[in-house]
Length: 639
Image 1 (cartoon, helix red, strand yellow):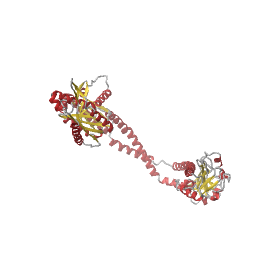
Image 2 (tube, one colour):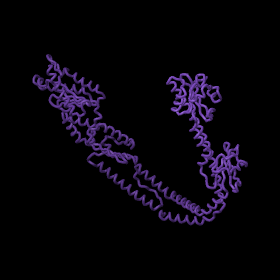
Image 3 (cartoon, one colour):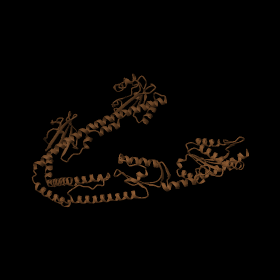
Image 4 (cartoon, rainbow, N blue to C red):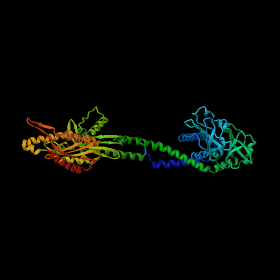
């Protein structure tokens, strides 16, 4: 049997072996390798720097084009604003003082107003009055506008002839055709952008080592236009000497300038010649400095080798075995409780796997015992758990019995899970007692179930207990205690219980009304026709009220000849009052017809509206009751 190896012994031995090999190998290093590396690094650095410089020049040129295009758009926009202003005030021109005031508001330098024939008739500069689109090359640019009034033109930056400064001019027609407006704007911000994008600023932002510098030479004039050297006067020699250059970085060549030998590279780009120069002595200094640091370099190299070997071992022995263990743990995550049966050959991992398997065995035993207890319990308890961590569901046999689900071989675990969740949705729609979490469930047979939901960071669990045997009877007794025997309406206790329940969720009340009704003439009917007729009279009133009230109502006979109705959940006051009017119209309806006499429904009625007259149902009852007695007095007075 192969003996397991311990990480505590393998890693120190591996590091010791690598250090010994490193010191045996460190000395066969020669000067040529170091010199070649430095020289090649210098050339690569130059190629990268030239490429970076080209990118910066191209990027800045593109940015400048964008800035110039945006400046033209801004000029057109200001000219459009001016034309719109002139249309609004109903004028085609302003005098010089008004023009200068408007120019200051628009933040422009010049404003000119042209007649429809193209003559300057007004503006900020009277010296231009009388000029036309034929008066010079600059104004001639705008001549096409005389033939096409849809044109909006912006001239390239030109030099103002009268003042000798650069200006950008834009012109548009006034919408009614009464004239042309022109604005002139000195491109100060654009000039600042040009200054920011020049070659000198580009080169100033580029890093250089202490032994190298860069010149940019104009190919036509052979003059230095930008340099990393502050004083370029010492380098005027470039104006007299032809340097080798092409579209690619040149091969290394050497020159003496001012008594110093330089290693040089050149490249042509868009009318410029890039010249990268290294002090040859600086190169030698760097080389010797590198040799002085050779020991450090090789120590670092040895460290890299040691790290490489350690990484190989970690990958081969540690990571691969850890990946296998993680794969087995993922199976556990998905619900498997089978033992992990892999061999790693490493003592620490074998100990870890031993204890994991012990835990899995313990879980299997506990699950088995738990299921046995649940299934053998005299109290029918169903358990359902959906574990988001393991991405699995668990349920016991008792749950299927409670939900009247027959476990068939044709149904997969996933299909059973879907069916159970569907049954839970049905149960939630039949809540009987929120405090006790009691639900009514019908699936062939009617049951009463107590359902408790428990949520934690990993799972959602449901515990279902079948309490049909004692809850059905208790619920029936409770319902009977809240009903009026004669009319099957709620009694006073039931009425108040439902009001308390409704007011726990005031958002569902909407527009509501409390109505108090008192049956008229009940004593007379009892005395004349007997109590059986009186009972029929009360039942007829109850049936009529219940029919008119609809679903969103709590209707009760509070005792004797008094009824209470609470209407709620209406979207408007008008809908609510419509139902109240219908209830009033019940009066006078015949509930029993005899040969010589027709018995009709008669009652006094009072109501209070919510939220207009209050939001507390007790206050609404007092208001409605008082109005009912007032109505009764009026009805007695008028017979």
